[in-house]
Amino acid sequence: MVLNQWQALGHLEPGYDNDRSLKTFEIRLPLAKDQVTPQVTEQVGKLLWQFGNKPVDGKSLMAAVGISHRPTFLYSYLQPALNAGLVEMTIPDKPRSSKQKYHLTDKGKKWVEQNQAEK
Image (cartoon, rainbow, N blue to C red; front, side, top):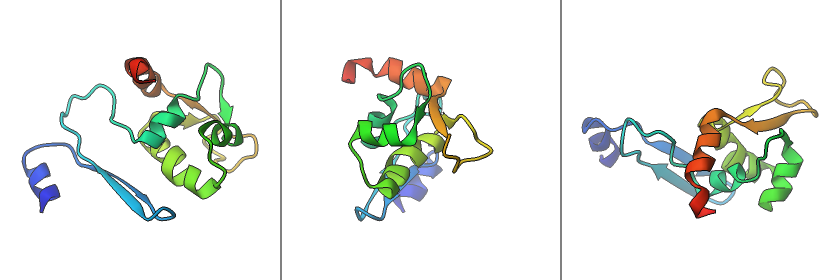
């Protein structure tokens, strides 16, 4: 009912993150339609801080955020960042390639710039 009312008021559709391994979920209710950078979960924010100017491979990102369980990394960190358009693959045609790396999009870079004070 709350979500229906939220959308009836003209707000953007809520975002969902469901982490079955931790048995948790998160619902994000965006406030404005003209939001310049998206709100991100703590996990996605932690991931975004790990990028420099060069593409980074998945194993390095996992180590940088302190996660050793690949499914948790994929579902809580990487997939939400990819879905939000903050990170993109260097080889999008082959998502499971052993040479796959990731880099920040312009949207991701803007989020990092706007959140420098929080780091």
